[in-house]
Image (cartoon, rainbow, N blue to C red; front, side, top):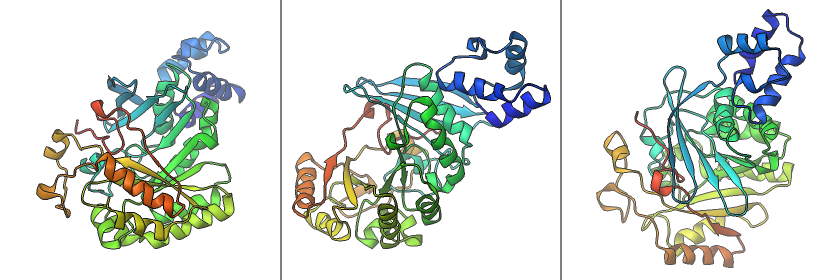
Length: 345
């Protein structure tokens, strides 16, 4: 729902200013079409059908996982692919994983999105329409900006869309924006966003050379500078920062790696999410993934850490009083898990 286009259309028709609010309220509550909006005159509903597309996205395919996760491939009006995910949990959580870009220009080597050709930033309406698609089927209550793209490369659209999510039933405290550490956007987020939106930062190694190999952005914005901004967030907002750490066998999962991570964090400011590695589907590698050979990574293909290695890593953090949890993997069988979102179509 492009509200800017909606407001222009209503103004040109001489409609009262409250009409845009009515349309948005119906849409946010899960209306499936203009026809559902019974408080609008029939003539106006017919005009909107012709003049303002009900969604800025076209659904291409939808896949369902055996664990209840759903993944949808959308196309924007100009043909760019976008994927979004709904994760369903037994405790009643309905969590959305939203994309902020079509593709991603930052090429983290363990992430399928980095294998795609970068398209463009998404508008705030294109981000919201991912959420609205799922909202039309069922209530939703959590959202993470961890899909395709680096959110802080598209700062304005991400923040604008996040500020509207409470209308869909997703409070700010249940919204998380995840960054690889793009400092210009991160600094703006710390300074400008007063709403209690959560912050997550991808680290994946505390060793500078190793992190640069995994995440080339580290050469431009070193981890020490990123963590300094995160500590400013903690001081200003009184909320912890979530550290994302993907576990790669023989690369970043040793006790020494855990001690290095503990040395740059503190339990007052950070909580670590250890993420079992989700392999990049073979077709995504064939269509452009550039995966370097890492230590213990013969042939250039990453392997996920064993459960035992993850538990050892977690124990080291625990002894250093750094809280850590192991993320529950969802949607791996449909390439919907963390790091797997990509479309070459």
